[in-house]
Amino acid sequence: MCWELGGDLGHVARLRPLAEALRTRGHRVSFILRETVAAERLLDPGHYAWLQAPLQAVPVSPVYVPTRHLPHILHNVGFHDEQALLGRMRAWRNLYAALSPDLLVFDHSPTALLAARGLPVKRIVLGTGFGVPPQVSPLPAFDATDPAPATDTVEQQILDRANATLRVFGQAPLARFVDLYEADARLLFTLPELDHYPGRAEADYWGPPLQDGAETPLWPEGPGKRVFAYLKPFKTLPALLETLRQAGLPTLIYTSQGELPPEMPTHIRHTSKPVDLTRVAQESDLVICHAGHGTVSAALLGGKPLLLLPRNIEQRMLAARVHAGGMGLSAPALMPEGMRQKFARLLEEASFTAAARAFAERYAALAVEKNPERFAALAEKLLGS
Image (cartoon, rainbow, N blue to C red; front, top):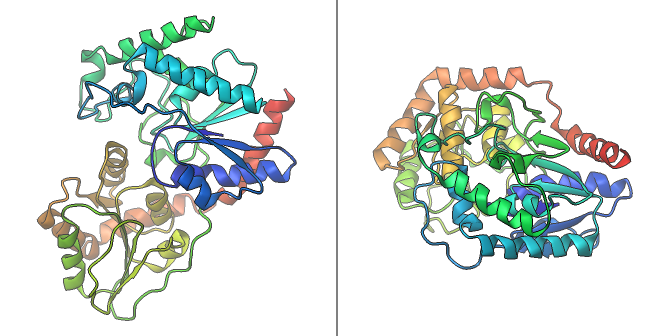
């Protein structure tokens, strides 16, 4: 199981139940991971071995800022230079040789995919949508109104570099860069309304990843609607906390990074331990987060609207999808007045809750808890073939 790009615990958390389903069927599962801290927190070393993923260690120059489509991101993480790409590909291929896998699973791992070209190994590509681009060329812009894919040459440049490295290993070139993501199965662990790339021609939606290993939410006492906030440090966080203080509503805040002010009013409770998001969605009235896929999907499957504070392009894309569906409001500028006004609207205007409840009703029969066994069956079918 390979994870190359992205941060936090979400990628390993998505792969863990899939790995467990395979392990309990007698398969040996190993990981090649961007962040081994995530493995130490989430994986049992008695059951799994993990190795460090090859990464671009030297800063890339020039860096594309802002990133307007996936080719810009890939340029920024090491597809900018043929020799840099070739060195990482050799490292990936050496890892494959050491592990001798029958099946490779890729979660947001473009260099790992490139290195696997030509190997006699079955391949599964999976993700929430952002790391599994649609099979079109040129790749679309992150903002549908942006002409970037039609006006710049970055995609062709990284295609040329990728094909140059493939020639070194005696492999056939890619006709389009998106062909890099070809696999025996491409699985989207999301839902159509939450796909970062709406309107895919073909998609295999499995629903959001299974959430597990978190604590029961402990709400502060007090009247009024319950607010849950999953927050990380950002410049205007004090202004948001002041809005929550003035609202006087029972509020539970989970922060995995940084500290909140030591003196908080009694209607606000803080925890640094992950909270059961399914229970949060059942028991809250409004969810505030940075538009991470796990929190967003859990809130909407529980029928709760969202105030979204995206901090990167992946989060902004998902926030725009939620906003377009009328299930929440996005404040991407993170300005104090904008956050305050949108927080008030979400509490006062019933349409947002109604839209979130309609989403939850559409997927009331969704059984994501069955996905690990479903995945294991798919893997065994591929291996058997």
